[in-house]
Amino acid sequence: MMLHETSRQQTVDLTLLNESERRILTLLAEGHTVKSIAGVTSWSVAGINERLRSPRRKTGVGSSRELARLLATQKNRDEKIDLAEAD
Image 1 (cartoon, rainbow, N blue to C red):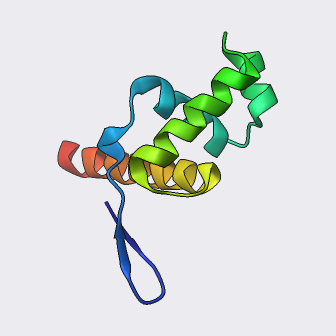
Image 2 (image 1 turned 45 degrees about the horizontal axis):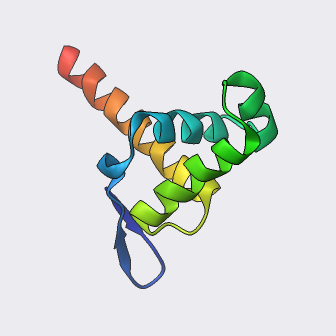
Image 3 (image 1 turned 135 degrees about the vertical axis):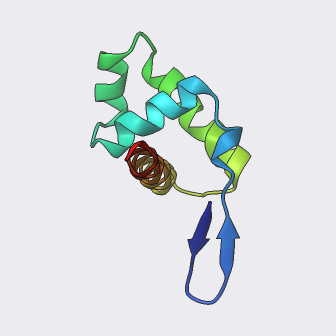
Protein backbone atom coordinates (compact mmCIF):
# COMPACT_ATOMS: atom_id res chain seq x y z
CA MET A 1 0.00 0.00 0.00
CA MET A 2 1.37 3.41 -0.86
CA LEU A 3 0.79 6.47 1.29
CA HIS A 4 1.61 9.78 -0.37
CA GLU A 5 3.11 12.39 1.88
CA THR A 6 4.14 15.96 1.15
CA SER A 7 7.46 15.32 -0.56
CA ARG A 8 8.10 11.62 -0.15
CA GLN A 9 6.44 8.23 -0.45
CA GLN A 10 6.12 5.82 2.44
CA THR A 11 5.36 2.12 1.97
CA VAL A 12 3.35 0.51 4.75
CA ASP A 13 3.17 -3.29 4.62
CA LEU A 14 -0.09 -4.15 6.36
CA THR A 15 0.45 -7.86 5.71
CA LEU A 16 2.87 -7.81 8.65
CA LEU A 17 -0.05 -7.47 11.07
CA ASN A 18 -1.49 -10.53 12.79
CA GLU A 19 -5.19 -11.10 13.33
CA SER A 20 -5.37 -9.73 16.89
CA GLU A 21 -3.49 -6.58 15.85
CA ARG A 22 -5.87 -6.09 12.93
CA ARG A 23 -8.88 -6.56 15.22
CA ILE A 24 -7.63 -3.95 17.72
CA LEU A 25 -6.75 -1.48 14.96
CA THR A 26 -10.16 -1.98 13.34
CA LEU A 27 -11.88 -1.19 16.64
CA LEU A 28 -9.65 1.86 17.04
CA ALA A 29 -10.57 3.03 13.53
CA GLU A 30 -14.24 2.67 14.48
CA GLY A 31 -13.71 5.22 17.26
CA HIS A 32 -13.11 3.01 20.28
CA THR A 33 -10.66 3.98 23.01
CA VAL A 34 -8.17 1.57 24.56
CA LYS A 35 -10.45 1.25 27.58
CA SER A 36 -13.55 0.54 25.47
CA ILE A 37 -11.60 -1.99 23.36
CA ALA A 38 -10.64 -3.77 26.60
CA GLY A 39 -14.34 -3.85 27.48
CA VAL A 40 -15.27 -5.36 24.10
CA THR A 41 -12.48 -7.95 24.12
CA SER A 42 -11.15 -10.25 26.81
CA TRP A 43 -7.82 -8.38 26.90
CA SER A 44 -6.56 -5.99 29.56
CA VAL A 45 -5.75 -2.34 28.87
CA ALA A 46 -2.04 -3.29 29.05
CA GLY A 47 -2.65 -6.09 26.52
CA ILE A 48 -4.41 -3.68 24.17
CA ASN A 49 -1.54 -1.20 24.45
CA GLU A 50 0.96 -3.94 23.58
CA ARG A 51 -1.17 -4.98 20.61
CA LEU A 52 -0.99 -1.36 19.46
CA ARG A 53 2.78 -1.00 20.03
CA SER A 54 3.71 -4.12 18.11
CA PRO A 55 2.13 -3.08 14.77
CA ARG A 56 3.73 0.37 15.05
CA ARG A 57 7.12 -1.30 15.40
CA LYS A 58 6.42 -3.71 12.54
CA THR A 59 5.25 -1.03 10.09
CA GLY A 60 7.19 2.02 11.20
CA VAL A 61 4.01 4.08 11.56
CA GLY A 62 4.36 6.23 14.68
CA SER A 63 0.67 6.64 15.51
CA SER A 64 -1.80 3.85 16.26
CA ARG A 65 -4.69 6.00 15.04
CA GLU A 66 -2.88 6.67 11.76
CA LEU A 67 -2.15 2.97 11.34
CA ALA A 68 -5.81 2.18 12.11
CA ARG A 69 -6.87 4.70 9.47
CA LEU A 70 -4.51 3.13 6.91
CA LEU A 71 -5.87 -0.34 7.67
CA ALA A 72 -9.48 0.87 7.34
CA THR A 73 -8.64 2.58 4.03
CA GLN A 74 -7.04 -0.60 2.70
CA LYS A 75 -10.01 -2.69 3.83
CA ASN A 76 -12.37 -0.27 2.08
CA ARG A 77 -10.28 -0.47 -1.11
CA ASP A 78 -10.26 -4.27 -0.97
CA GLU A 79 -14.04 -4.35 -0.56
CA LYS A 80 -14.52 -2.04 -3.55
CA ILE A 81 -12.26 -4.23 -5.68
CA ASP A 82 -14.23 -7.35 -4.70
CA LEU A 83 -17.49 -5.61 -5.66
CA ALA A 84 -16.07 -4.59 -9.02
CA GLU A 85 -14.94 -8.16 -9.74
CA ALA A 86 -18.39 -9.55 -8.87
CA ASP A 87 -20.11 -7.54 -11.64
